[in-house]
Length: 229
Image 1 (cartoon, one colour):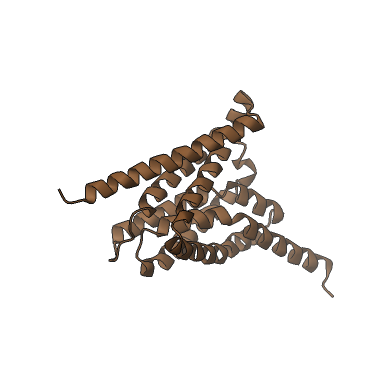
Image 2: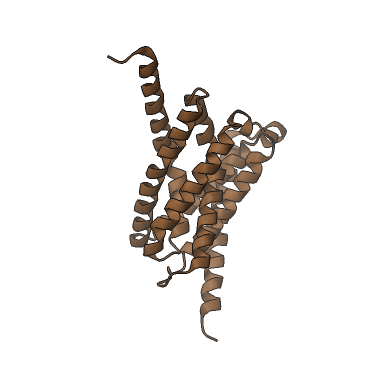
């Protein structure tokens, strides 16, 4: 029979694992889209290094987690960054994956993974921090446990994207929605414009269309530039 403190520790760990499972989807999606531009032999390394670096930064950010989502303009800027990332990864991933290693592209992809993961993990950081009850050991445990979930999910989604390219557009639409939702729930935006449910749905739809159209146009322009004169 477990003692009271041991039982609470076990329950806290299980709670954190469930939170990671529930909230890792968006992060895995953007990582899978980002790594699709890499040769298959480089993808796993990019995912592991990118997710690992992001978790280190998450630990640092979690120290101030209670204040993160209350800072004005933070989610507005973060949401804008997610929209930009959605457009970029769609434009990149719509192109054929290179057959030869590209170190510069690998570093760019890792950078995108880190930025996207940190930007989209604010809610995750707060949820883990709350479940950890202020315990730094549990916080590090929770953020560390998220790595295998994200790595496995990202690899699976990347394989599915190779087989079913339509998932690229579905993923970009989801990221566009996430970015729009972040911007609309920023404290400054919420206090200034008081967005209704209808306005929220309309804004999310507009951003989704923007991501898909701009991403496709950029991809088309790159194809045109690669054509021999």
